[in-house]
Image 1 (spheres, rainbow, N blue to C red):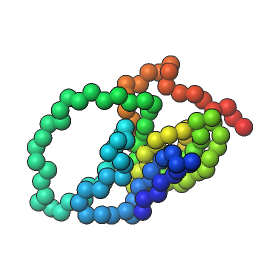
Image 2: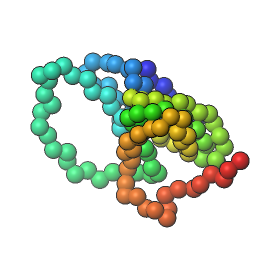
Image 3: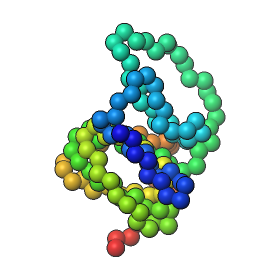
Image 4: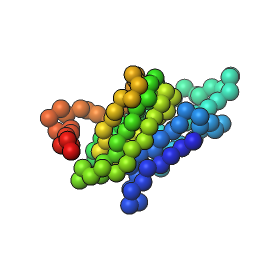
Length: 134
């Protein structure tokens, strides 16, 4: 299953659940998305031809993150850019989420291992606004 979290026509996140399956290549993002999320499923013997990615200049604004929940259960809270709480979703082992817009917080509900991928470089003192506790 694929779930899109949308608020006022803005994509906040895409959740790819562990039970999703589709043969071949399925991209879950539009071609103009700053971070592309694809799902690839090929039979044994399939080959991806060797290739090199050309050096292309890309301009990005903001940070997009992909989280792969390797084990455990987490809950992600979604926030709007003004730090207003929007909604929450639980993710468990095997689920993947692409965080696109707004903010987020993560609660670990069961001990979890999470793999994170995001665009860089990381600029420590300019990366985040912390949400004040309610």
